[in-house]
Length: 524
Image (cartoon, rainbow, N blue to C red; front, side):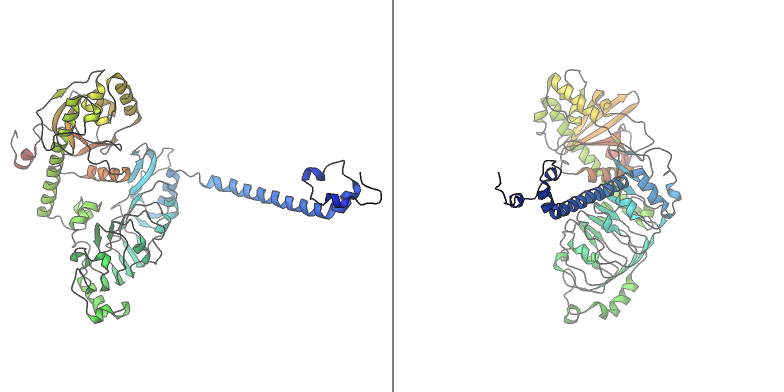
C-alpha cells in the first residue's frame, strides 16, 4: 500500500496491454498519466488493422484472377490472332480442351487433363501472339509455331519460363532480339529460330542457358560474334548468317557445315583466324555481310541436316521441310525407320519371353540378348495373371492371387494414349485379358501379338531400356511417330507410358516381315 503523499505513477511505467487499457479498476490518476502513451498505442493498432484489411482485400482480388482455365486462356490466345481459321474447332461450347491425355482441339497436346504443348504448324496463322495467355498455361512445356506467317519482333517469350522446347522456324519475324529475351528460361532445351529475318547480334542470354541441347539459328541475318555458350549442344546450326570473328571454344567440335555461309567466321573447326579477323568488330564486316547475302538461300532450297530430321517436328512432310521431296533421301529415311523398328521388335521379344518362362516378375531383367524364341501361345488364367505377358506389359509386380489384384488396380488407374483418331478405342485391361503369341524378344524388350477380339489383332512392343526417358519427351516423340504415314511404315495406334514400362501398340500384319515389305512376296 503506497504511503501518503507518494505518487503511484512510477509503478505503472510498463505499457499496459489492450486489456489493461479497458480495465474498469484502473486508477483515474494513473490513466491521466498514461493517456499520451495509450493514445499512441491505439493509433498503432489502428494502422495494423487497416494494413491487414488492405492486404486481405488485395488477396481477394488476386485469387479470382488465377481462376481462368486452360480452355479460357487458349480462347484468349486465339482471339489475338489476325487469321485463326485453322483453329475453327477451338470453340467456347462448354466443353473442355483436354479429356485426360486426349485433346479435343486441333494442335493441342494434353497430359492428365492439362495442356502441356501446342503444335500449331503450317496453319497460316498470323497476327499478335498473346504470350500472357500462354503464360497462364501452367503445364505448357512445348510451343511450335513453325511454318506460319507471324512477323514483327520476337514475342516476349521470356514470360514462358516453363518451356522446354520453342519452335519458331520459317516465319517472318524480324529485327534485333534484345539481349535479355531468354533470361529466366533455364529449363529450355530446344530453340528453333531458323528461316526468319532476325538481325543484330545473337542475344547474350542464350549463352547462359546451360540445359540447351539444340539451337537452330540458320537462314537469318545475325551479325557480330558468336558468344561463348555454357551449354553442350547435341545439335547446333548458325549457317547462312553474317557472323564474323573467331568461333568460341564451346563450339569448336561442331560440324563445319553449321557455320557455312558466314565468310567472316574463322577458327576451329574452320580455318585459323588471321590477325585482322581476330581483332575485327561487328562494324567492320561489309564483306561478310555481302557474302552472307550472296550465299543465303531461300527456305525452299535448304534441306535439313540429319540432326534436323531427328529433332525438327516439321521434317516428316516435304512441305514442312521447306523443299521439294527427294526420293533418294526419303527412301533412305524410310528404310532406316523400318529397319530400326524391326530390330527393336526382335530385340524386345527376348525380354518378354524370359519373363513368361520364369513365371516371376523379379527375374524379367535377365533375357537372352539378341535371340528370338519359337512362337509360344500363352492363355491368361485368373490365378496367374501376374506371370503372364500382359502382366509384364502392364508392369505388374508380385505373384499369385495377390499380384493379380494389384495388377487389376494398376490397370484401372492408367489408360492407353491413342495417336490415331480414326481407330476404335480399347483399354489396357483388354490387353490383360487377351491371348498372346510371342513374336520375338531381345535385350531392349519384347514383342507379342495380342488377339483382343475376332478381327482385331494388335502387336504390343514393350521396351525396358527406355526407363530414363521423361514423360514429356516420350509423349512428344510418340505423337510425332503417330503422324508418320507411308506404305512401308507400320503406323502407331496407341502407346502407354509409365516410369518402368513403355508400350507401343501397332496393327498386326500377317507375314509382315521387313523382307516382304521391301521386296514383295507372300511369305518371309
